[in-house]
Image 1 (cartoon, one colour):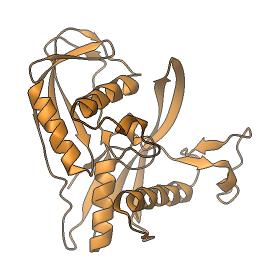
Image 2 (cartoon, rainbow, N blue to C red; image 1 turned 90 degrees about the vertical axis):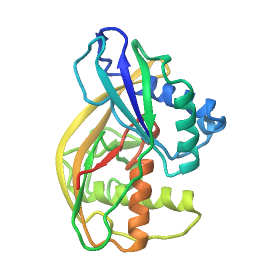
Image 3 (cartoon, rainbow, N blue to C red; image 1 turned 60 degrees about the horizontal axis):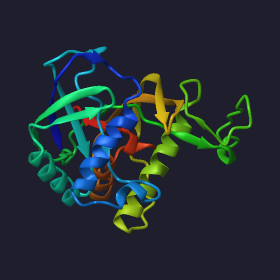
Length: 250
């Protein structure tokens, strides 16, 4: 679902907007009739983009786009209906205010056959490596953490392995299958690492995420279905906070 927003006043761009943007999405979800999703344990099976295009300041009258995705097409259709109902109303995302101008739905299309295509990170991918697997990857943290974020100083192997395991786990939970197919991501290019400020229940923390380009081709039907699910639900962790949102670059 693609939402077109128009700023109603000038304001600073809020770096800790994730929780507020999530709140706006959850409000749409509740009003669309999915009241229990917020309290569902584990993955919520939706993700969303940044405000596009990014800017250091929100100027009055500027246009922003927000994309929300989910493998649950019925939920997206319900969100679209609710977005149409409130079109023209003013919405708040933290201290930023916008008017919802219009909305539309688009399909996630993955090329068939043997044509190459790429995926680009729309928002940072978060991978947390649990303490019991650090030795497996040869990682020695400075302190005895419960987990460590994958960082650029580590080899790509734990990132790819944890990413694929996370995708398979979420796919199996959503589809009710027991597939263990991998690998899906064979050719990847690291772009950069980012530290994202995140405000959670009046507490600020920092999330380490990374941006990537994935080069893919010749996917069989199961892997194509799994990848389509990953694009709709988000890759990696913390998708319902806007992390792991991906774009097909062609």
